[in-house]
Each structure stands twice: as structure tokens, then as C-alpha cells.
Image (cartoon, rainbow, N blue to C red; front, side):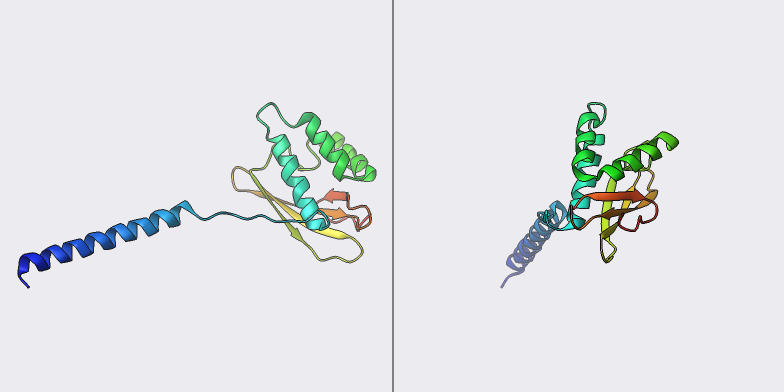
Length: 156
């Protein structure tokens, strides 16, 4: 084989390898499809659904969640929890669901494995990277949130 053909083959092989490598890198950087799953019969999913919808409503560019946020509270929270939040909000002049005057940029819900009621830790992450951890209790009979605070409410 002459040296021109060998050089051409080496260049073609290098070009092909580079093209294939770039294709793989481009596909990897685009990422694959994400999956989020849940079930309305799972209390941790319900807590996550509430916080996701509530934060979306409060983040609405049309001036805040207003009516939708109130409807979500009425649907997901027990009357006792609504009363507890109102008292906290009157005292602290902030949103009792988020325990803040701002809306977080992300959230995460983790089950705490309690007996008799569902308890979850909700971690809210703010724009500067600070986090707030809340404890949320949900009844297993009505599947409604019965307490939101910095400590658990014991399933009340």
C-alpha cells in the first residue's frame, strides 16, 4: 500500500472517529427523557403534588397564585391546618405553607416513615441556595395535610 492511501485512510478513520465522538457527546448533552411518577393513593405523592402545584401557583407571572393557591389549600389541607396556618401568617406576615414571603426555586419531599400518620420533610431551596426544611403531617384516613411546621405535629 502506498503512503498516500495509508495517510488518506488514517485521516478518514480519524474524521469518522471524531464525527462519531461528537455525535455521542451531542446526544449525551441533550439528555434523555425524564420520568416522574406518583399515585393519588400514596400520601408522599400527595404532599409532593400539593407543594408542586402550590409553588407553581405562587410563581405565576400574573401576580401570584391568589385564587388558585387558596383553592389548593382548601382541597389539600384539613380545616384545622388552615386555621393553624392563618394564625401563623397573622403573627409572621408570611406565607405559612412556605414559611416565607418569597417563592422557592425548587422543592423536594422525603417520607419520614412514621406510624399512624404520614410525615414528610419538605426541603425548599431558595434563589441563593439556602434551604428551609418543613415537616408536613398527613392523615391516613382523609389523605389531607393536617400540619405544616418546622417540627412534626404528631399526626393531629
